[in-house]
Image (cartoon, rainbow, N blue to C red; front, top):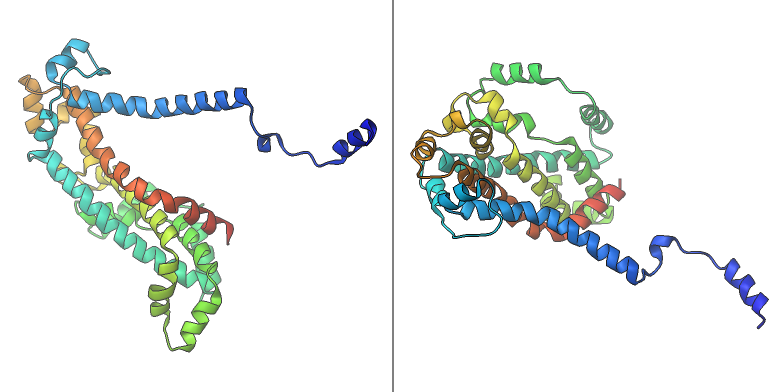
Length: 308
């Protein structure tokens, strides 16, 4: 075969995009360095927070701020925070609100998504358009507060759940996933005498474990990280969740919990060490739950997003 023939064939062959080409040594080295910097950017601050929370007060005072290299380990900050008082109560409040809120939100979202995924259901299009409209138009802060106040929900834990109980985005993701399930399965179950509730519980939900796990994580992280509703609807600081106590410790030292404030003033504890310890306690649930949901994340999100 002549050189000209080979050149012509190579020009006619389809060219692959640059990102599909096998990277060379320079490309692999660049990617490795970039990923390393990204990991350091994420893990570096986390390391500093953990080390500072475990450092004794003299070490923090000697360094004059955040501790990077450990110089002794002590758990006095954690034992003081978990030994009773407002922080311990705030942790229990956050756990309770997160569990109850996630269960309630998932129940409402799954039922709404299943109803909207059945095209022949009553008012299907009307309710779907109404829900989607709320994604672009909201009542506003003042009407929402007046509604919560008129319902008598202020200074109650329900005010931390009901105002943000349902996410239309999560409902649409669930709906898209439910619509992607083969209709032959539901029709055969209906022929055998199964009702909608039994079909949902025995067929739809077992096949939707991936998207249910992802949406549950979304709701749980939202409830665990929420602080605005508590600052808006709660007047009693003893009812505050963990995030609001963290704000008090980090931003407003004069309003810190009484026991911790006294310990800091007497020099028993370091204010910075307490702040870092509360941050670690706030990060632990998300860090523990995320790996168990990670394997479902790609399947749950992509399937729900593509099939709609």
